[in-house]
Length: 397
Image 1: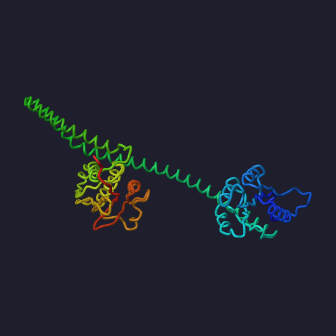
Image 2: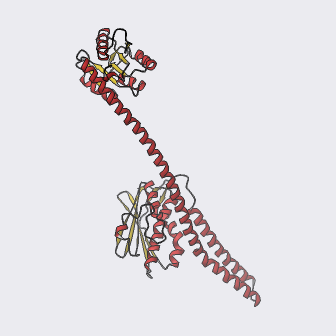
Image 3: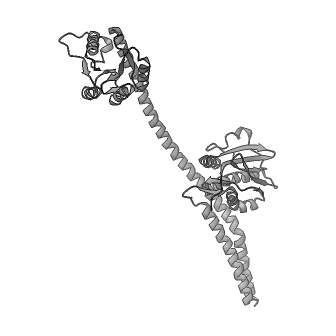
């Protein structure tokens, strides 16, 4: 058997013209060196439907497909056969004036073409050989693409797991920061309650406890307790997950983040200057953006603390430019090392001695989820973080 056809033992010819089929069959038999008593290598079908039926029954090694059949014509014929036989080489048969159709057929899934009445045995063998080689390459490419897609899905799943771990680590880190600030914010009212309790005891022992003083002590005590209760409510609301995206004012998000950090800044003797001359509305998760701001504020506080500055200052201002809401947070903590400036938002990258490298990365992820971005640069005596979020119209009442 000729080497060209050693793996192409059966050829399906889909051709409605008996004369053309007879010539093609003769050429195939010559190419196969078929003797009269040998097994017939050719399967004949005169319509597309008949060809699809026989293809399903006998699984040919190569298909010679006429593009002008009684029940189908043109590129649609190739697509139908390719769907039925995804891995079998197809050589289309066209008329001499259909070169454009041949190209379209190749784009639709055929591997080669022959012009009826213009090819001999050598041309037939060459077309079959080319079709088989091209078909094998396309099958490998298809398998590679399928494998690649599976790998991509697997890597995405791994990345999602990593992101979940990062999110959990970020929440734990933030929770530690929140508990630290609750302790600071409770210290003052707890001290006031302790003094109030001592005053009540002294007034009783010295006989100075009157109805009026009891009313005053009670009112003072309720005020301190309400302040502590409000602290708990503020922090509890901060950790509540919104079920859906909402429209909110960036000013409110800044205020919430500052309310969380207020006591910490007071203990660290860090002055806060806030300038919010405009209302800018954005769309997203309110608490997530507050969380992002909190991460930036914690970094600014830590930078000032590490620098040992007695005059620590954090400046915050809000702007609305080019349809973006912009929050700029600037500190005087000495700035970010130039080599680290391009990496501060990468996962697990940190310049702190005991840092995790999670906070600013999660901030970046939150902002990208809101179709925003975050940038860092050094300014005189410190660093500036700029947060950009697409602005939207105010919510309707």
